Length: 607
Picture 1 (cartoon, rainbow, N blue to C red):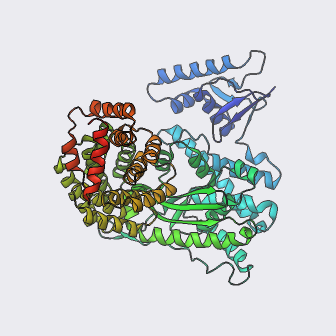
Picture 2: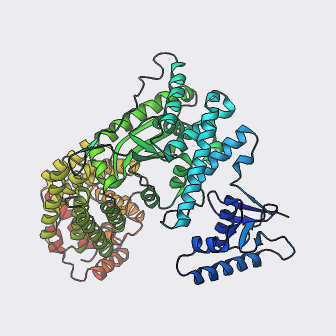
Picture 3: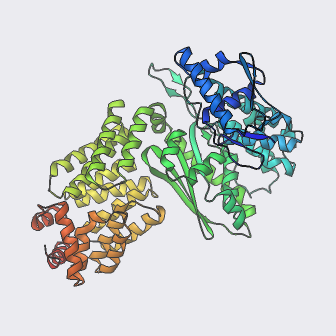
């Protein structure tokens, strides 16, 4: 009976029927270390490597770990670890391990296994610290990458062989993710891409995209510094299993794009295996932050269309988007052309914003504090909004004049004004000043113009608000948050039909939007006299409590007194000092009829 030790993508020990044994993680890592070394290691060396602190405590921990490992294995079976005096070694007749890549004979099996080892990562939950054990884990990962590189170089001449092509392409992506400065691998990949393009009929693929190189930036001493490539994650529209099951070519198109972008020195591509895990995660932002991703190409497949949007993660801003049909008849011929067109647009956008992106890339403390602030804005409650503001303040302490944090601060003040309903215009004036400061610091920015427009709307500067939001939309036509804010201002500008059309577009761009999108859609519907439609939008909010005033007005206009009263009581519970006349004076409407229609609904609700 034998055991299998898995170290790639996870860490577990299985018996020969596939049952996972309950073994402490440290014991599994100890087994991996002994397997990797392939020779007896002294107890003293193992104890000092795995446990920091006093020698006595380290030896006690080693004895305890070995005892717990022995208890997990039936006594009738051979021990996994052999003792030879004061040295320990692994019993290779009892334990198989995925580290033994060199034992594979078939070239295809060896290359696939080398790819899997680098893609899934050796002991992925460890290796980020500064201990000798962390250093060993990173050394193993580097050796695995070196092994993959050797396999890639050995077989690159077989790139055109259908059996090896997919694994060689995958290897090139993984190697350039591991080391974006590996010019030999990039040159071999580029040569293959160029050879493939030259086989296409003229005019079918379009102009060749010359791999762009990031421009040197000025360091603090004024000298030119070569920037490291910015991280880009291309998130596939489906899992590999789903794509295979449905025969979708969308993932294949994104794979083509990934390979092409690897030839560019302007970006460092997150490998497809990692990108798929990010796409499947419930908290994409946290994982993108973990992998230092500055840009994410998010993709969604709907029936016969593929929607693609490039998101600048630090500002959560869509900087470019497109949509095209996945025509089954022609997509095979179009894949290269579409891939190159998207590549050209991505590189152009990234190059244009390289300096701004570099600010995030080289100031991680401010960036991470800013991201924590963004998380706080996902919930429309005063505690979460004020927590977000503290994070933005921390970002500004780490990086004075940080434009995105200034815009974030502006947003928290405008939302607080809306939630408290006290008419504190100082909040709005401060929000306006912060948004203007963000624009001065960075120049035209969609997020800063958006926050300027929001603050100006509630200050009653409706025309100024529309101008600012038009600027935001012109800078980034597919920035869903800017469209939402523009729609909100159009509601107050007495143009609810245009507002509803614009907020519908925003929801199409962001199919799982924050509650504010539905709140704005409900407001536009109310002023169009579509009260049940307004209530249906409110029902789609995860937390509809902030929209209780609007819901009460809708039920009032529908003559549903009991439901209107229930909404009114929720409003008064959250804000016991709510004053109808004060609130209506606070809310800016360009035309008088809007204020009176809102007043009528609230009066009918019992306010």
